[in-house]
Image (tube, rainbow, N blue to C red; front, side):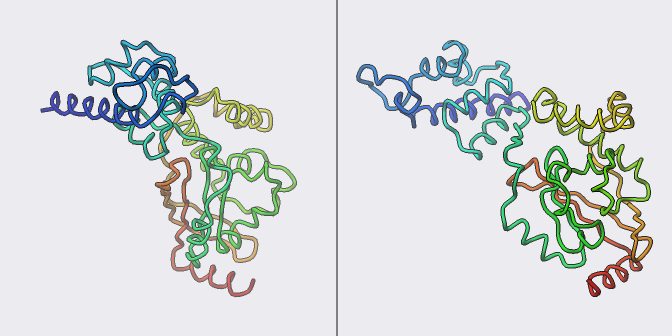
Length: 280
């Protein structure tokens, strides 16, 4: 049964590539039109040449044969075939390869996401990117943690706030168990970026953190990883004292590199949040 399923998956992958290939012309990928064609679209050899692979190998892939395919080859094919983001996701899923995450998509978030955060009322919520850049927050989060908007943009990062304490961070309130939480964030960060440590932006952030924090440097050298952080967090707020939260993290489907972090308070914490939001 499993063998049949694998064969069907490879067949689907080959047929998908074929349909995308026949939807393009040679001019669309920067090749001369050539001789008159019997069938519409690109030839297999044109796709192979443009993607930097042999025609025999590409033909085997399109024919659904049992061959190994890497993420880099898939990315090259996706580029040549001019696939949309949804089509790229479908291609990588069929090939059983991890999806490529694009840092460029994390610099800003759609307005609707901020609207959703704002509608959460007394539930503090943050949006972070793959490298834990803080991309969005609501009023409840601002009342609890401080105004991230007043930080320099290059310091608006959860890893940076936890490990590199600078004068501008004095207005941000962090967790009582800061060192364990910082270690958790570092370990989930390593899990997120382990395939892309050579990307210039990620490498630069890691080097910057190592230079700023001996603790980060030590923990990074231990190579520990985890998929999620633990659920309960305590915070000592300068105005209302101790706050206790259960945390939950959700992945944004349309942008897999973005996470939404929610902080749900117990009864006493909720009462204090009501006080904070009412007074300010």
